[in-house]
Image (cartoon, rainbow, N blue to C red; front, side, top):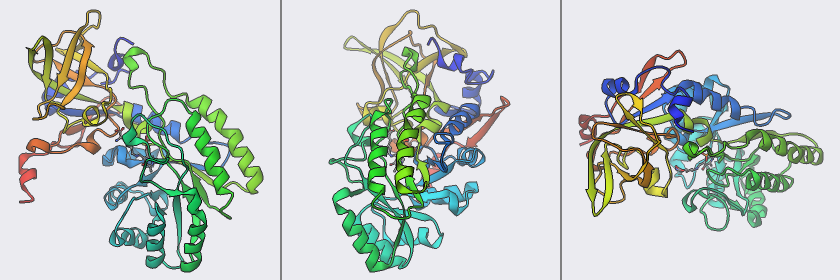
Length: 413
Ligand code: LLP
């Protein structure tokens, strides 16, 4: 693909140079239609049985995006009281929030219990804690199915090398704790990891969780987790996650379980990235181009504090270069390393990347930044977090989060 922002008409006729001038850089720019399209798609992963998609809000908690999920009939999963509070502020009722925390204090767990939010316990000790706090209550348990998948060791969340979930061999102890505190297990959940393009490991994990589910009587829900990938190499024509094929292959696995179990619990999934990743780009200004020991560097204002994924996981994000609002052609490419403005050698957006010639004053447009972009921003080097702008369905622009200021950073002192 020559240009994603052109083929998706990402800016809906707005001039990106004007957007950058109006709102400043670095700037997260979202496209409402693309986000809603993905939310609609996840809402239909299962149609034959009762099902809800839970948007995993850790990917992006901008309240305007949460409101889109609310409107598209997507429920949400939250990892912290902060995320729960954001969801409440967006208008989510407690029934539409699933709390899937990890190693939380009694105080934090109590807050969720007081709010009446269904909580998943990630270890036997957290289950006991739940029992102490809410004797006679109803909760879920997160199972570690023993196999994981994902784009990097750091995002594989099941299997033998991760902190997450309760191992299958400990299931008897779950029942002992339930008996001790008179608890009911309403649901079981898992999440094998993040960003896979081949549905096979997920389908296997679904079958595996359903095998385990047979040990739990009267489950209200079974949650298979998220992780569906998006094509980060779209300029090289990487294919999309095969959603239709995945959906078709899921049905017989569910059929077999429902026939065996005698009823269909509510099935859930927890996609984060898939809902929002492709619906955002970052616009950043190129402030300096230089040669160093024969290598060409383009220095932008998109530091690792703005987008940490490349530094943290060596993640790939396609980059388009814009000059005077127009996409620079990729007919002639040269090797360039694109960096940010943070005082770390690891502050790299793209290493030795084949890109068109970059000049000072150009805009770097980094693709697929809607998931784990802003939500992982930091004010490292005392650089305030960027602003976020939404290209609405009607083409109008809306500031959906103002740029942080240095005064904001000083406000806690
Ligand atoms: N459910 C649970 C329990 C999770 O831990 C996660 C992600 C999700 C759902 C959503 O996964 P998704 O559909 O977005 O892959 N920061 C990393 C990803 C970390 C994911 C952590 N858990 C990245 O930028 O690639």
